[in-house]
Image (cartoon, rainbow, N blue to C red; front, side, top):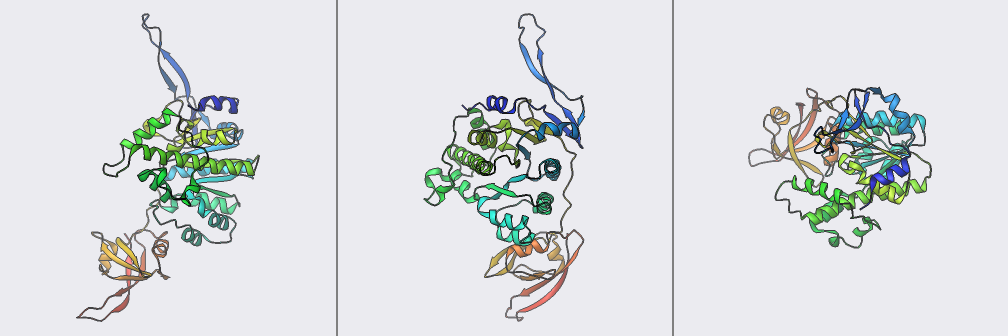
Length: 391
């Protein structure tokens, strides 16, 4: 089994103190060992963390700045996690303008669209359309917008780490053997299957998946290994091509726990100094889970306005399939079976257009929706513009 802690001791030289970040006030974890009082046992009983010693992020940053690669873990839908990531990116960029931001969020085939956006050759809407952001991705883009806007404002390269979602999903369902010749290009040359702790954590995650998803555990494990190895290989290749460049890796915390996911697999390919920072891992918290643990104050993403419709694309048209109970669209008189032609002055030719048209609208905002209602034996087809107050 690959010993993550051995390479961390070797590469880091010294270990960063694990820390808690509370509204940018940082508390180091002073890990110690409690010993049993019983004279019969005389053995260590457990580890303890002293949460009372306090420091600041300013005090913590020199240790992070000493590393070439900083992994910052997230729970994808927690806005405060992304704001904490951005704060670390700001400070590292101030020290190292050659920074690159590597993101799990984007699949590697979309690299050119990220490059164009960061270089201001395209706008945000174009990048999201071409990258297919809204297809199969349920995460509100606004969660990540501050990070991407910062990258664009400062011309910081953004590296797409992920493999296409359909590849990992196919492996999870059918195994690596099911991939076609073209699909197999996403399999790294080397996959380390020897980490038993990693396997056990993946198995626990597997048990929490809804029953009936028809995943075989061995295939599920292969998909997770492929996912982590491919992202690690992508980051390692970039570092080899840009020696000395600093990197911040943004990924889900499950890819970073104990260094067993992306970090150790990157180190195997491109040994370098690194540190792992996690945002509030909840009941997974333990002294060895990372180098730094942050607890940013909860912050909700501002609510966005909703039409309250389920829709489908049909020949370049957006058809309303159904309406949610008490929906804004229903209250305005839009019916199931109607076609949405334009929203807020944005002509709709795809679902991307609809999502982008209301991306920054708030509850209570009124938008004008052009609707085409199919004809019937009792009325001809007609178009009308309907004001809709979003909810």
